[in-house]
Image 1 (cartoon, rainbow, N blue to C red):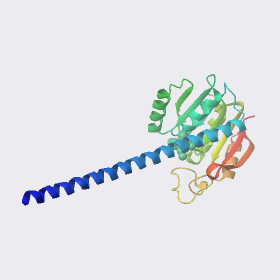
Image 2 (cartoon, rainbow, N blue to C red; image 1 turned 90 degrees about the vertical axis):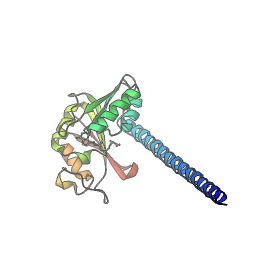
Image 3 (tube, rainbow, N blue to C red; image 1 turned 180 degrees about the horizontal axis):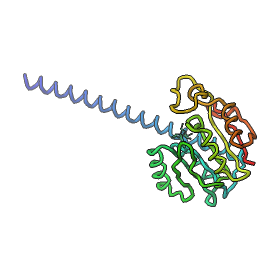
Length: 224
Ligand SMILES: C[S@@+](CC[C@H](N)C(=O)[O-])C[C@H]1O[C@@H](n2cnc3c(N)ncnc32)[C@H](O)[C@@H]1O
């Protein structure tokens, strides 16, 4: 009698474990699928945005482009497709962990023409007059020393070179960025202030695109 009771208890416990394993496997599967969809969307967005940027800035094979504040490098890796083997992309970052990950990804992808550069708070750390085009995507509002940084962006551009700033006005629900000038008015940067700063640095504003994805704006400047 006792043996039968124990057998039944064991069977019930086994059935419960099997059910839980099945549920956990489903949860793991669903989380993996969601992560894969998110990653492929991010790659898709980068490819689309860079295609549009390349057309508007007239990138050509052989050009040198810098992605300042490259993050995980999605936009640098999309950019290198447009400048080809004869061109070059500088992917810069200020964050030590992101720099390490960027370097690992560049070597994993065996990209000879993506150069990772450690950026500084007030300096791009790029060579002087190295770039035909520079872009900063959602980075400008993180700059803590915009006047000094802007002067170095201008220094890093070739005469006739183009700069694109993709950013957004202050958004509610986001924490203010630490250390940035107080005139930002929240997490983001008003387009007018950004244009005034880069014009004061010596660039000429050429074009404004206000229908950039995710309610961002994109403003283009030229170094005369
Ligand atoms: C919101 S993320 C954008 C990353 C990437 N551009 C993108 O669009 O996915 C802002 C990035 O700017 C970087 N950053 C902040 N200040 C910087 C500076 N002075 N120089 C270079 N990168 C900087 C941060 O480390 C962060 O990776």
